[in-house]
Amino acid sequence: MRDWDARHLAVAAGAALVRHPLQTVGRPGPQGVSIDSRTLSPGDLFVGLSGERTDGGAHAAQALEAGAWGVLVGERHADAAAESAYDGAVLGAEEPLLALHKLALSWRRELRARGAMVIAITGSTGKTSTKDILAALLAGRLKVAASPENLNTEIGLPLALLGAPAETELLVLEMAMRGPGQIAQLTAIAEPDVGVIVNVGPAHLELLGSLEAIAAAKAELIAGLAPGASVVVPAGEPLLRSHLREDLRTVTFGENADVRLLERRSDGSVLIAHGEERIQLRPSFTQAHNLRNLLAAVAAVRALGYTPRGSVEVRFSAMRGQRAELPGGVVVVEDCYNANPMSMRAAIDDLAATAPARRVALLGDMLELGPDAPRLHREIGEYAGARGVELLVTVGPLAAAMGEGFDGESHAAGDAAAAAELIATLLRDGDTVLVKGSRGVGLERVLASLRAEPGLGESDALGDSHAASAVSEQR
Image (cartoon, rainbow, N blue to C red; front, side, top):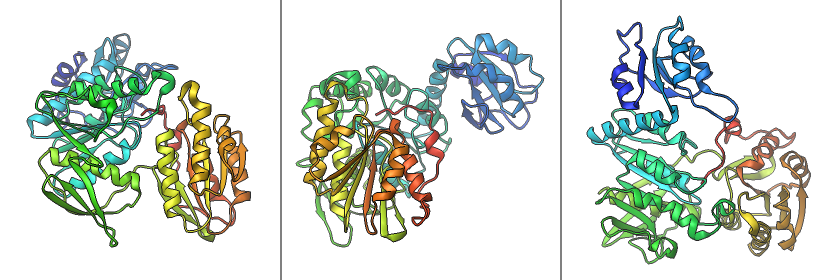
């Protein structure tokens, strides 16, 4: 949008141009978009959104004082912002969030006119890792932009799209949801060339009621694709079968699929098949669930007409399975961004496959599972025992049920603070510790405590910036 002047931007957002910038020379358009007047960079467009506790439009003058290119706010705030003594465009809209959506869609269409393609990814678990892998597959061949961290909601996705540079050739967007209609809304903004559904699992059962309803919500991505686009889905997933369309190109991944894993080699490379094509890659990761995510990513890349080759160096988003080694040979697997029964089992499988000594699992509540939550938590405890976990620490009232199904040593902590104190007394040299739970449990506090614990030292795996995320957990 750097080439868009105030009038162009107002038309794109469906907003009224209440005040032109007083000085237009050298800055025809905004450098970026921000929804926080406290952290915006000079030259950004500030969009004032209404929240549960405050109306961002009330901070329009503060944004202009901080050097904003301009502000896009509700109509009742626009006139007041226009009286500000600080320079900058002032745009007024009846619904600023809707205006943000329109602005993002306009930028997406300009990117398409410049030749950019969009891949959209959703799923109950693993979509962020799949996004990270997919971006890495083509990073050396195309100018790739991808959703930063958790910008995957009705607010985050438009910001991610608007943050894509004009020279972007491939934009990889992640889509999350809390209920019906949200994936459809995001798909309408992104207009993807390829849609990817990584999986369908028991996340948000409390809100949606059944796996069939969860599948239907994810399949809104399929319904929103334009005829002739491509969709990537797990092979043989019965919950998605009725949602597939004949006017789309469907590519499957997994066992007995279009894109499938043929061989894992001792040198760390993998051989993948797509039809008659053989694709050899050397990924920087070995977890079974991420190798499956790799298949989904390869399928999406193939749908665009590219064939990836060689090394795949992926820097996964924070708290998605990174490993931090502490003094005494203790290894902490930092996988506490979110959790549901599917992702819990995958993380436990990885712990079982990689821990050289004692396997320790510190597991928190899995939220939004509805009436079946006690049973689903108990089954995770049973699964952990069956996979060789020797010490289980549960965090939260729901996770306590895991201990009922676990046949080894177990301890229950009421919250993350209590768990941080407890785990420090239980660890031994050489342990591998999986830390995983839903975002609302706040297990990053346990990670911070382990880094600071005397005798354990600090990990450089991640900082605390993600702990204060204001975006609720969505999948």
